[in-house]
Image 1 (cartoon, rainbow, N blue to C red):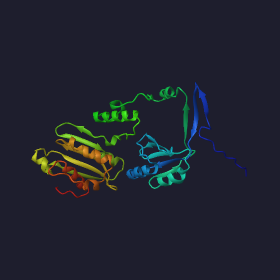
Image 2 (cartoon, rainbow, N blue to C red):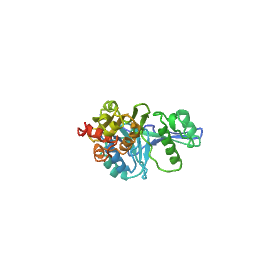
Image 3 (cartoon, one colour):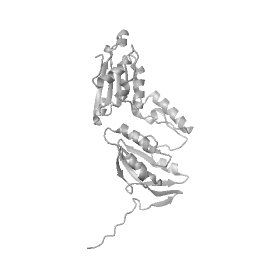
Image 4 (cartoon, rainbow, N blue to C red):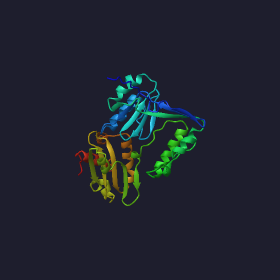
Amino acid sequence: MAKLDLKIKKPLDGYSKVINKIKIAEYQFDNLVSLAIPLKTERKCKLNFKKSLGEPMPNIEKSIINKSGILGFRIGLDLLLVCNPSHSSFVKKTVPSLKQAFYITDQTGGWCGVRVDGDRVIEMLERICPLNLSQRIFAIGDVTGAPWLAHKASHEGISCVEFIAGNKNDEPSKTVIPSCVFSNPQVASIGLTEKQANKKKIKVKIGKFPLSANGKALALSESEGFIKTIFEADTGQILGAHLIGAEVTELINTFSLAIKLEATELDIFSTIFPHPTVSESIHESALDAFDKAIHI
């Protein structure tokens, strides 16, 4: 039987070349693993990622680097790549810690990067990417895409200035940006809708409380409308809220904070809402999602 001499080659076979004073070379990742987020465990994975790497889990198409030089890239809704080319504790400590929440696969040798160096790197990248990569130019507001809202643009402006000043700031996720329609009655919404949750195959509990059952709304003769809340069934985490009624644009902020802090139904249950107020309907809607509503 013939003896096979197998050799493992790097994906780009060690490619390295200088073109117009720009050096282009293969960058081989060492200790590269993929992290798959199991279904319905987003919150658990975020807590584990923060504990394991000391940095918040990045949003889709974003990356982080911690004090030890560990790189993390979120390349999809439920998939991240994490690597460290030098720190020895990565394999011994970090990976076992991440295994407590994620499905982990060793990708070392399966992926590679391309490193570019030189004075004209930005000019080169701008030719192949539809982006302006200048560190002096930042985009905020409508030009960055939906949702096209003034309060989103304002927050992006603040985040931009904080970044320029060298201050650490948390980039807002598009799922925690409230949307308001100043019609009559008003409409306000944040987070996932029931349809979106079902499309993602997330098992949910739905609460709905009519303003016609709220004493303050009745006293104001503004009892048209309702508050609908959406919770993840397994963890109780609030995923979305949708409101119709008089001045509900003033109530949506409570849900903005709750979703931002990844609050659960128990957090809302244990919150004391003043009486008589329309905001009590928030409490009742959450209670209704778990068959505990008092006034309907």
